[in-house]
Length: 219
Image (cartoon, rainbow, N blue to C red; front, side, top):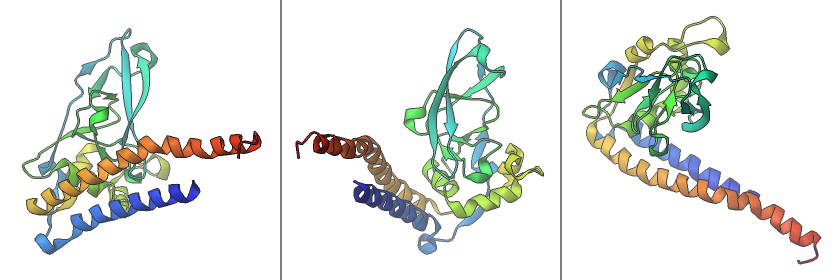
């Protein structure tokens, strides 16, 4: 079971490396340094908090691990007066931890969840950049130190990336033909990751089940 888990992790890492190589390969044409302000539009919080309503929050993992569904809270349990409702294909990053790889495009399973005003949410201008391309780029570890340089604050762990600074950041944007190729590859990679998530529980349960049978004399 340990070997199977290791092989699955290796396969995922190689798929991520494949996406990065497509993104940065200039065989299909050179990349163009482009301000994020031309690729993204900041959304305003559009949900007025009701103290009696329940809200399902989303979060963003550090180190390029994406958006996830978090806690459900009643309006009276948190101080925010307004929230932003996520839509699949939006781009989101917390101000506090963006420099540590907490940036991602919202997946379909997190559509409709909410985030606080500490999480800037952006619409992607798909005429210029595909969401998959932006997602792959900002999940690339080599990019995170560049965002750290754009973050402010003297305490390393409390440095913040403000939306205005982020929108001024220049991303090396590949030609649309390269973007479309990356979209198709990422679609297959994401399908494999979903399959892995569905079967991880089976692997985790396998060893205890075998041990239980062994101790009971069934093997």
